[in-house]
Length: 116
Image 1: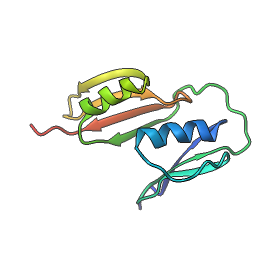
Image 2: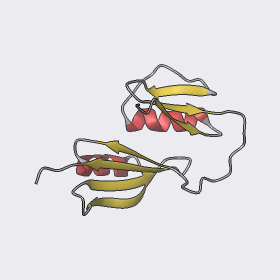
Image 3: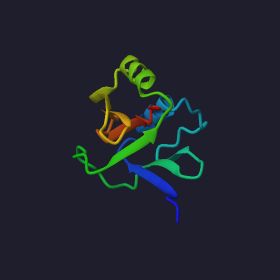
Image 4: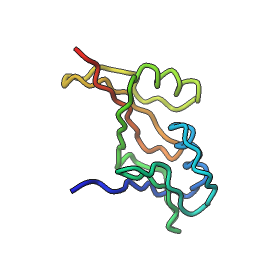
């Protein structure tokens, strides 16, 4: 079994999709205001408005992405003026993580696994 899709529900598909397209340097050619596929690989990332109004997100979900170098991404996110929650930190299990908020206040983690 594999995870097929992670979907972020939002009140503003275009705003949130544009954030993730900039974050991942992806141009999917879509400006749909109801549903957009952002990453279409083994596991998809989609942004969707199902018509339900959502209040501020209380961090009931965290989405993590493995990147090549967390420190490089940290600098890039600072330039994008993203809300950083925690700077790059080596965790006891060996991963180097940083966390930040997307425009809907979803908690996002970038992680890498530096060689010892």
